[in-house]
Image 1 (spheres, rainbow, N blue to C red):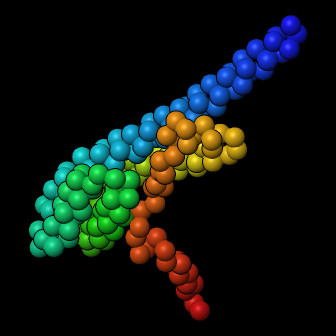
Image 2 (tube, helix red, strand yellow):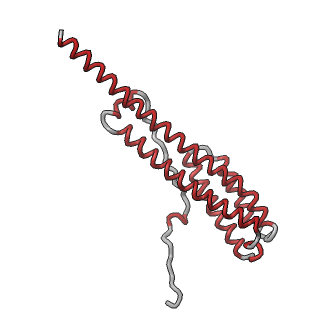
Length: 188
């Protein structure tokens, strides 16, 4: 009689443990999805600011047509990207295009003093900070999910309930991101 009770208790504990592991994996997977949506929101917010920024700069530097086209094409590529990897690559290209746009703006002192340009530049900088935070949170969520689904015995549950999809990290791929910054001192 006591063997039956022991077997029932062990079965209940085992089933409870499986349920706990399953729910933990669901929580991590949903956290990754939410984190990705936060990145997407911020990328779209930045993309929405770009046309106003380009139009403001165009008013001062109309002959910089190739820079404006590069920014516009990079923005369109980001909005059309579907996967995490495609978005990361398009984000890197857009970042480079925006650097070119701001380099053009540096050549026009009256543009740098324009209140609309300054407000857009400040809003864009704030959005860049939010993107960086969202990217870090997403990548941390992917790492936590991967660890949770790869640890034993959760990996058995993950395989049985199809939690084995590999998630990509969001890392913009740009040549500038890989370069070591050059530091120089005047007077050397």
